[in-house]
Image 1 (cartoon, rainbow, N blue to C red):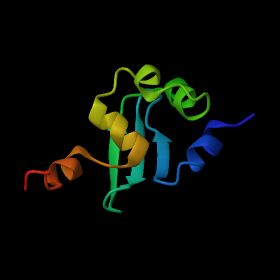
Image 2: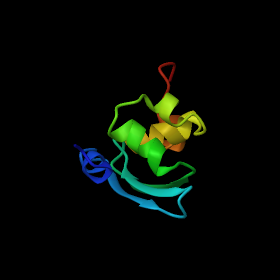
Image 3: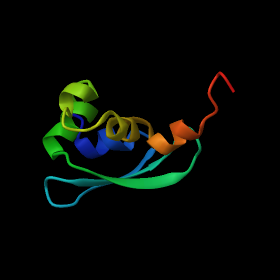
Length: 91
């Protein structure tokens, strides 16, 4: 049986996922877009992380309380500011 730690280790962009108070996690990740490292505090539980990382529940169902930007950061390490900085196709 896969543990949460093993499942998170298998996601190479996640450098650290640490419980802050049982209701929040500090996530440190490398952006898949820029390679930059940043952190974000996410209001999630260990059960939500487990559902996503181990059980394979889609992140929208596992963590409906997170914004799309927060879910993107957890999945890819990419912050919304990075997407906003990309040139549009019209440019």
